[in-house]
Length: 386
Image (cartoon, rainbow, N blue to C red; front, side):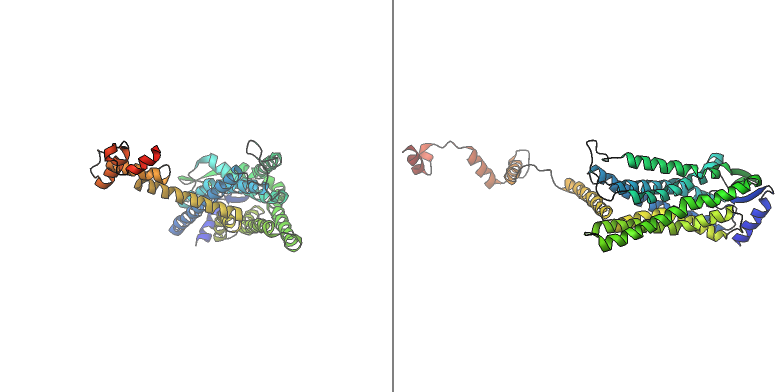
């Protein structure tokens, strides 16, 4: 079926002077309408749902920092949500288009940079979670400008993370190229045979240093810290919940990115090619990981859940206020003023409806000067004179 057709294409098109040959930006030249429809729809669905979730998480964290409720962990988790958002908005659509077209239609620049950029973001995600082990979970006091009390550490850590993340996948950009295929083009990664020895060593170090070691360290650290917090901390409830959230994020990232890293390394070390279905499943899991992270935060992290509830209440109250303003006139002041205004409006000459009893009452109250012979209670006036 698909695997045989794809394998035959790879064998016939692979040059003799390259040590490996792999598609970039999604598997191309697959035959079958099911692949052209199912994969793009699946990727777009994951992309849209994950983008909404990560945007909500970012809004909640921004709101917390503006209200003076930020922390170092929240700063790193906001960076994680931003990275997931970039992956879903910039990387996933490229794969969806490639699976739909089955050839490369996005030009040489995107062909050269798409795999490099995606790997940079994936490595950055892993390292950001590893650096949360050094961050404080408690609130950070805000200064006069509204920022972090000591942001140098966070800024330096994020700068280091992104520099390392963009340097490691540089071979992905160097070995990417567009090849003609009939009237169309395909985007592939091909490594010259002369560089096979060095790159074979590099592709063993690269996944180990950027995925295996950080994930194992992060999961082991939070497992040990959670055990200590539950058994020995005097008031472990809040801290253990945050640790559990970070442990779940690290575990989910390790499990969901393992197929992608496994197939990537397997191909570049020159072993037998993995099944096409496994490669497609690995790519879907990579984007599902970016969509699953905000779900963990919204369901398990108390601050994010409370912020989500607050945003929901704000949105519903504003919509109700708009409806009530259309139905009811705007009133100001206390109840007596409101009643007086209503009566005044009722007896104004411009209004068609008038209330004779109320009009007579207020007219009598205005004419406070009463003649002596018409005074209904003369004894009150006599008592005042005495």
